[in-house]
Length: 229
Image (cartoon, rainbow, N blue to C red; front, top):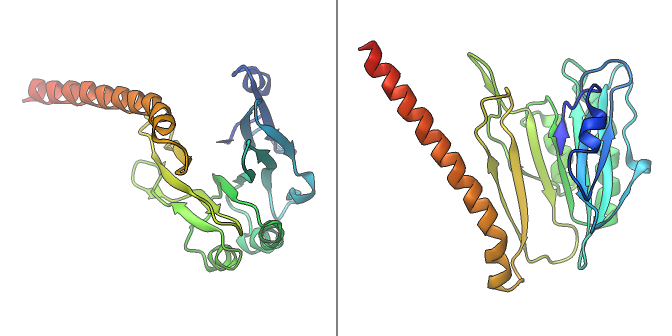
């Protein structure tokens, strides 16, 4: 899921990854904002347009609602970008009705995006609890010179049926943007160990590359400090 995709590079996004479909929603009043979701084509997927929040002057938001099915399970996947400076109560009121619809569907649901809302806001927190949609990752991911805020949220509801899935999430360090990219992995614990091990290899390699990159930068920083001394 990508937030703040803007409208300039949509053709690039659509053709960036082979064998993926890119669903997106753009702001109708400016070139900024927007949200998009990539879905692997081997999965069964469709848009849930009936759940879409329609943007207004008082509730400026882009959102994508999908139904994604694997061979064994069906999910609702939601991407949200809520523009800053808007009325939280207006957004919360609309969002509440959609959460109730998701609850009635009794399907596992993943909601992620840049909400530009403090997760401790009582309006949003109460509605999520009632709908049994739980926060999974609340690290400070919007970084500025003298502030760090929690505007990027990840929520998950397991649905009504027992699930052997478990969650692993976090953030990657990135110095090319003021938002740290988050990741969310829903891992099927019932699969054989050999299958799960294969899935972790690429992740471990990527983490090793991040650690190597961090080590190089630390060494450069230490060298600069020695030069100054």
